[in-house]
Image (tube, rainbow, N blue to C red; front, side, top):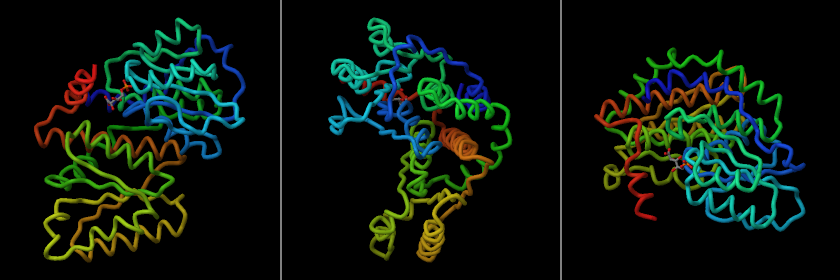
Length: 321
Ligand code: PA5
């Protein structure tokens, strides 16, 4: 049940993953993380918590085209179900090329290939939650696999510091504000994974349209789409903008958010600024994501939508077979 998945989320950081065939993980200087949807999120989070890490996110079939260089790369496939065809294809292509690989998932074809080939992998606990709700398990697993021990420990501490219950009231209020609106989430480029996470939680849990963009890029294009006049007013009056503000952003990005917020308000466009709170980047990320989870959950409730399952995705996947 979604409500329990949110309340119990911090416990995921207690997870002690076991790396199978870990001795086969060679040395590497760069990571390519392949994953889709909820399972693709961990790549962005990894980049946020360790900006110096050379990590490329691959959300596609096959392999990225840049791999002809001399870097020693680890190709890491993450799929909660283990049956996502793009991710399995990515993994099999990397295996075929003889690259260094690893897999993370609860089972499925992905882990079958990893087990048959005696390849490094981690089998995630199957607790019945949705992939987008399993970011704690996935992050702990990936940090363990790539040997980021200090970050692994830091993530472990979140099980005590995150307090989902304390965020419910604030989220409920935000969900009320968003009633009848299409949320558009804005963040700095650095926090892009966060804005994207918010968006997909509104889509998959709330079952509503939601979009995102990042500063400073949006000041060069998207913003002008909201230079509302009488003829276009109808197009933008459904939007409600959420600005994820971060004191660690480039000061000019902070200024851009302020000026954009004022420009939107002047045009009658509603803006809610949410300041990322926490004592570390990791805490800021997961506190904000819990707010997103609760808000999306309350939105689903308000519209009478079932927050957990994603029948449209399941139905779509079946049609591809
Ligand atoms: O949340 C979801 O169900 C989806 O976004 C899935 O994560 C996505 O379809 C990929 O599936 P999996 O996570 O099993 O690889």
